[in-house]
Length: 380
Length: 140
Image (cartoon, rainbow over all chains, first blue to last red; front, side, top):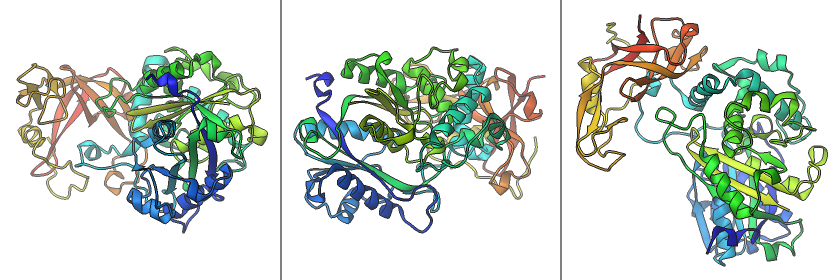
């Protein structure tokens, strides 16, 4: 057996959105997850009795079987809470792919729900408190800021580069009615006027915090062809996890896990980077887009400061990135945001933001402070 | 150095079985990390096992206290009341001359004057009876 034997043998057949997303007070994460699950099942043209696998990103704070029971799924062949933070969506997609291709399950529901914006924000944590907070080090904004500052030093990127990333994604969001910033354009002046969060990051460099849910369903390519939506095939998957935190990181300016996971996924899909028509990159920060694309090899170290210029990654640009607006401007559902947008682009159902002649989309997930990474290459 | 045993309200690190020697040494104004008795490499954060060779025995060796700024952020506003009077402040990753990385503050200079690779040296702040925090200032 080889990873390549699995290429195009599984497909994503349903995507579930919650009707409301962004700031939605008074709804708990489980309710969002239920709504997203229902929507994904309907979108695929299935019924809940078809679902025999459930993989959950454990943001719901509940045991996997409790989530399953609340979805009325009581005869599952595959069930797990799986967590590698932001890399979870691509990694559970691979797990689901192996499960359906090998016959463990037929239809695997991949599920995410959150009330982080209006409820309690409890993303990170665990373990005894280290010395960081005594020095005023709190959270991912500062930790990614440390990585980003180092990249400014090594490559000459910085706010001028990241403004291009943020503005391009905002332009995509302005074409996406679901996006949190659909009605709010952003100029360079607007970007520069944003308050510092942790210098060198302004607020516009940081992802949203959102309420809502997202779900999708994985099945075999064969079953997919008989369903309601055009199948989007899982052409390649890869993972690579460089686990030390940023204090001890030797990879904060790349290559991150994107490099090895990208190479693995490309080999499986039997294509090269030149075949990728669009990228849905995990963008917890603007800098994450820079270091991830660099690590995949779309540009070399030192080329980042020019790569994003002139709206290259925005609508009408030659290298479309994060076409929903991404985590910065659409909504923050971790790896589920980029992955589901990749599926919708390949289904040709993205209306005003639809890419033309699109055959391959690369979707990424990145967790911790560049500590986990997963890649999925989608093909139509 | 400054002793502020009264009213220190910042979140202090948890003392664990593994890291207790580190904090016992900082209390004596010494910066020490573990040296593996198997492979001889230095390692930090404190651990019961060498991450390089899995050897279980180590000794605590004293560092020079000198290093440079590997990276930093400037915090200009804080949601944490304990840091309200500190902004703007610098959170940094220091790389010591021995190659050990450590989160700390760069103090005794304006945030705008901090730069990557700037040479720094340790100073010890006795913040409570139990905890002394190593901080770093520019080498003059």
